[in-house]
Image (cartoon, rainbow, N blue to C red; front, top):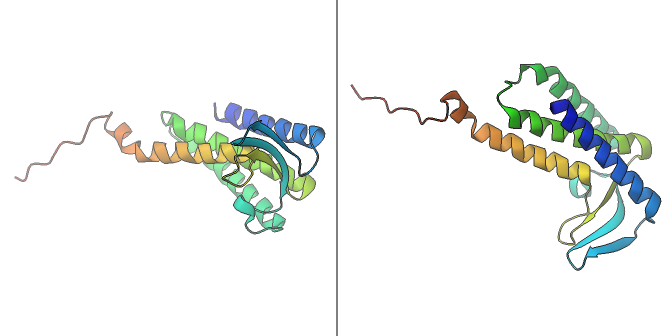
Length: 157
């Protein structure tokens, strides 16, 4: 399921960005649900919120290292920790989607605009959703060890 989620995430991200580039002009903003949600075509040369703008080689290196680390460690993940697999698939699919943009254009195409948050894309959404799944899985991880039962109290004797 990990590779399916990764692949679907990457494809949806790249298709959506391609459609934005084809159907919209740079800087154009289309109201979808005014005043809450717009499609706004922007280019981001940095990371989240435009941080570290024009540090493309750094972002490429980090994504390559992240990808290598996840793929090398993937086989060691317990099968029963499904949310861990799903979360990593979303994170890696999103990271590779943004990497593809950086390699092709030197920046990332963003277009989801809620007007109260910087404009972002589907890859960013997948990364955040994947991180939430990882956190959830790691926080509930001890429950799996005890089959969902609370640990028994030790007697003081």
